[in-house]
Amino acid sequence: MLNSKFHEIRFTATELLKFKYNSSKEITEKEKLVKFYLKNLDGINNWDIVDNSCYKILGDYLEKKNDISILLKLSESKIMWEQRIAMVSTMAFIRNNKLEPTYQLAEILVNHKHDLMHKAVGWLIREAGKRDISRLRNFLDKHYKTMPRTALRYAIEKMGKEERDKYLGRS
Image (cartoon, rainbow, N blue to C red; front, side, top):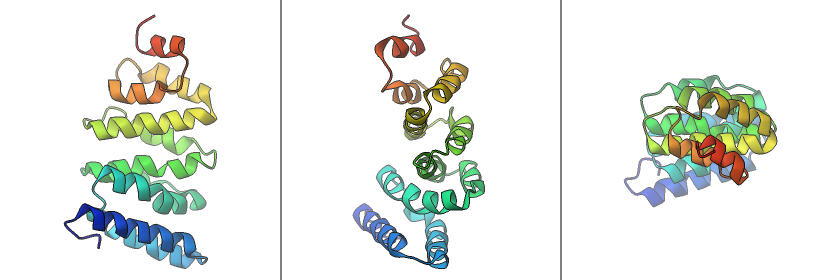
């Protein structure tokens, strides 16, 4: 199904993978599903398929292992969808109050050329900022002048007007 030319079939395939992953009690079964996911990344090639599956399968598995080596490798890929998988997978870490992987990947991907990566970076650092606003501010203080405007807007979306204006250069 992940090799289908139809988006809806590939999306459904990841829904089935998530269901199977979440239903699995054995770590060895989860590991097999993660390996299958990684072997079939060619079919995980649209923002909604990535965002709806990667952190719930790959991210969850890696968070439990406390290992981001696969995410770092994916972040270096020439394939934008693999880079997005790396970034969005950090949501599983954020949900468990582990923010370092998100910021580590954001440092690598913050100035990516594709707008779908700008959105992902901004979204994930905003989510991490909900857990630790000072960490988000530190990241923004370092990057706000050079990071893509879309990433910046996503990152500051939940901040107050004065703070948003500061980062947008309006104050």
